[in-house]
Image (tube, rainbow, N blue to C red):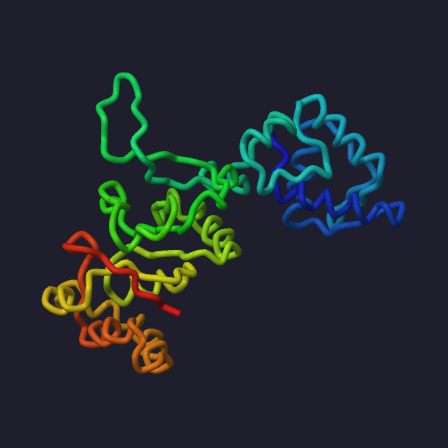
Amino acid sequence: MNLPSRARNGLNGVARELLRQPTVEKPRRQWVDDVVAWCRQHDIDLATRINSKALRFDTALLAQINDVLDSARLAPLGCSLSGLTSSAQAKEGMEEDKATRESPRAWRILLSLPPQPTPGLASEPRCSRDVDVRHLTLGAFGALVQVENLDSFYTFNPNISALSGYAQPLIAYRGDSHYGGGFAHLAEIWRKTRRPHLYAGDFDAKGVTLALDSGATHLLLPDMAWLSQYATPLHQPAGQLPYQRRLRQLHVSLPPQHPLRPYLTLLEKQRGLKQQWFEGELVAVGVG
């Protein structure tokens, strides 16, 4: 029986208190009863330390608990497994705490890179690669391009005039339940570079709001003349109305000639267009 995580956390707190006083008494509820059950299962005699209402801790009891943990190759008291990867938890002992461990994809992002020929694989226009954000040298990239939809990410072509002024743009999938956390780390780190962050995603109230929340400096969109012709209420459903209030506030705050204003006007008319329906050349529309 592993030492339950809440019992371990409670014992870690007791260990800190014992640095200031010889004994610590805790009422018999929640994590304390977990400790009692665990001690009994491992033949640790609580003797006079326990009664129906409380359990009294001292350094000798904690030493006995640590001896059992050590013999079972489990992490000692004072070692928190919370936030560690499974590999890091393994270095602390045989115990795995999936509920509090760091997700294997916590720092992973999906990038679109130039083709990389590999024996046995057919050549493709772009190569998709799963990487750790912490292994990127962001100074090598002139701009970050965040692609909202996965199918659009796989077909995204960075060789467009809107990106021609940037050396080696970093093309990254915005993420979902698998990659969303990793991209959030990337966006936070990228913001500190003060370089352009372009958002390629749905032209609707939610999509533009996602772009703003991620720190994007520009939207990659069809030019206004084309979009005005093809934007449709079918791609701006009523369920997106809650996002409109913030965009209206942004709209009135922008100067009269700001390039984003006509796009926001189109959204206010409940017309939008999903990214997969974009055609023609994209333009970079500043949001600041």
